[in-house]
Image (cartoon, rainbow, N blue to C red; front, side, top):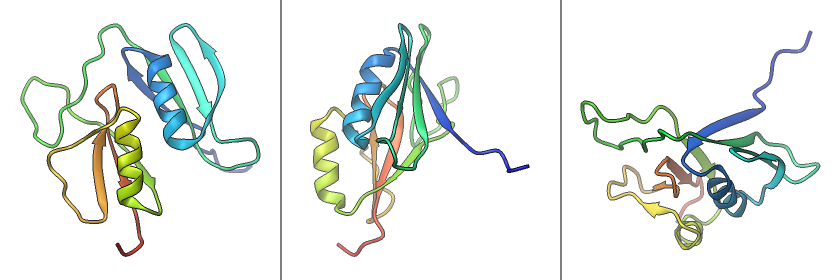
Length: 128
């Protein structure tokens, strides 16, 4: 039997359609399936990659990062997205609705927050 494979990462948020639209623009993904409170997006046909789903949760609370604050929602995961040009991609995703985090831990990584407040990282292995 082949081993199981990771097919989808699901992000909770207040508005599934709004967050799906942001990640579609960021990744060039297309909508695969949608319901009133849930959207699945994936890579273009023939391209490999993990799908992302967005699930609306009425009680959604954005996580805090980087500081742990007692009693507040802590970050449980984040997406790492490899890019060729860190500066250009950072500018592009900020224009699309992301927010640059105040604290940036590394020169080859940019920590941002998506419109729902999930932290994610753009990173590059290329020299600036």
